[in-house]
Length: 265
Image 1 (cartoon, helix red, strand yellow):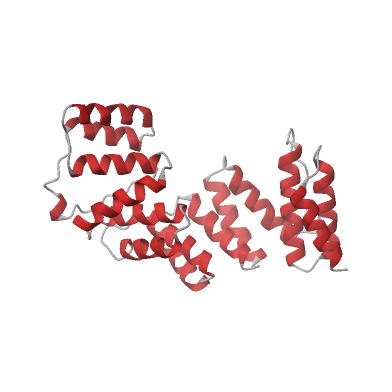
Image 2 (tube, one colour):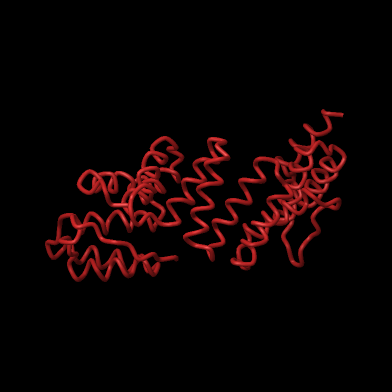
């Protein structure tokens, strides 16, 4: 996780969490969520309540991926602290995960105007722009996110994927190569890079050592989609056909894509 030193708004300076909640916050940041929940429950049992508890509960729900719970908790806190960039960022991220795009954009637009806005807020706003097909805004947001966190591969990956969605296959390779260098263990980034390379190469993806039928079939299918978007029907049909053969049972997604590709003869 990437951390930024941010100025604490004066309105928040007096908010001091109880010792147990402070430790819970550290546990959440470290990913020790069961421990954090135990600490929060202990604080509640001791009678702790108020804003510090509300923040802890919101942060825990967010860390657990329970965005439907986290979002209203953050929004309630925003009503008290409208100039808190972190609250606006977390609310925006939660709404984006819930696919509540207008709400996500409203919170993220607020976050990026406030002092202390992190790369995560700018990156998420780029993703939201991609959903809208607003490529100019997406480029601007990803550029700002990369300026704030040049070593964060997630931003480069999202920029690369954004370029893929626009059909800019060659342009997508460089940011995805950068993302892969920054996050060499990320399978998602590796797959995205291979997809971009497949889009500008003549050959289809090769099977990786010990790769499952399902994984290889999925990558072949993706390569077929790219080929189809480029108007290369022959390569698309080959990829979709191989995807079906790669799996031990019928691969519906590839089969449907193959039917569409062959229908365009």
